[in-house]
Length: 261
Image 1 (tube, one colour):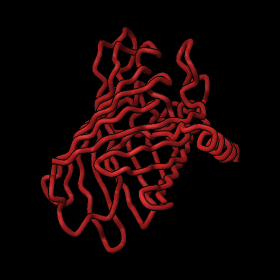
Image 2 (image 1 turned 45 degrees about the vertical axis):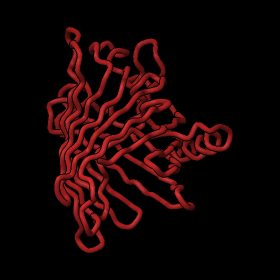
Image 3 (image 1 turned 45 degrees about the horizontal axis):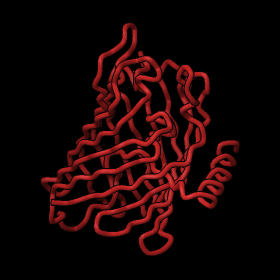
């Protein structure tokens, strides 16, 4: 497939010829088998710097670095709530609003049934800033469900708000993704991802994306992730006026620090 060839060649070039090991935009915790005992600390914070913020294969920060921060709280086994934020540019680039930040708020419940881990929850994307005349606000609400078996996680997100990421009349849009995590050696994992964004009532907005990523855990809360993303998104639909195509094949990197309290 064209997308597979693009991903393979881009990944080899990016990962072998430069250290542009990439990051994928953080999302609510993926489904995973819950530990037998609750973690010692229910509260954690994280901060990261990304070479470029890419979400579902689309560049959100105008191909420039993004600052990202988050916090999570798990008051009891299974339940979690958290928030995450990143600097962005796409709302301004498209002339939608003055917004330069994305703020996510999410909550859910994780557990296991036999060998299967499950995760269900709700995610609110909020984009502060003054809206331009005639534009649709980017705020989006999704509910999601995910299941994990061994190294694979299948996740489905469903849009329940009237619009999705400033695309009007798009209730019941969805995102279906399959993720795999494969240990290579101590502290080093290879992650692979394929996803499809379906946009209700706007066929030009639907596309498939993919990612290959390496993650190295340095310990003491520090981790470096990097890889490459690609999409088959419609260039006309996903190119802001005078800017680059958001869905182009892109290498990226993220250095992140996490601290539990």
